[in-house]
Length: 208
Ligand code: C5P
Image (cartoon, rainbow, N blue to C red):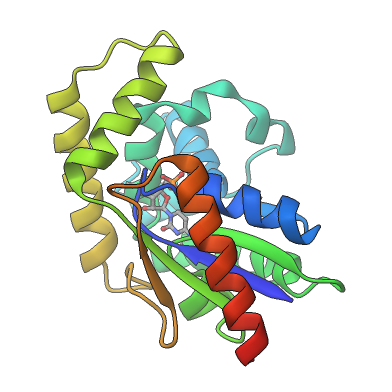
């Protein structure tokens, strides 16, 4: 069984995907981390994330980079959003994600294009959204907990810039897959969002 969880930054999709994986006993892949690793590697190479050749060269990152805490920073998130517009980068990361999705026994993947491109055949497709203000407040609390000094206004502006890039890019834009169930977490805490996601998954599986 494949569970595809898509949505914008800080919508709660990562928390939901992890909880669904634990609930159904499936492996989980946060595909945003792959794009973050490419963005970070591009910066380490001294490359330009807006240049397709520099971004493509950064796809050849060492496995250990995935564990780098710097991948979680807002700065790396911005770099990830810039390298992810290049079709060559998306193609370079496709096989790994596709193999993860189709492993025997199934998997949960979260990202932007799981239900549309990576695993359109997924039995469960969730599109998780939340208002910019709810997402900015969540990200702000996360950053504060990590001791990172960023202002709420800067986070909201960054989220909006990243949303715009994700929604308007030509290749695999952020869009709800056909048949995806929308889950708005603006007014939900983590437990309520997880419970709603499990209920949607159970209904989708019963219907499939
Ligand atoms: O989900 P996360 O915020 O970690 O993703 C970082 C960036 O990577 C996103 O803003 C998006 O541009 C890109 N991304 C993508 N496709 C995915 C996952 C992430 O384009 N499947």
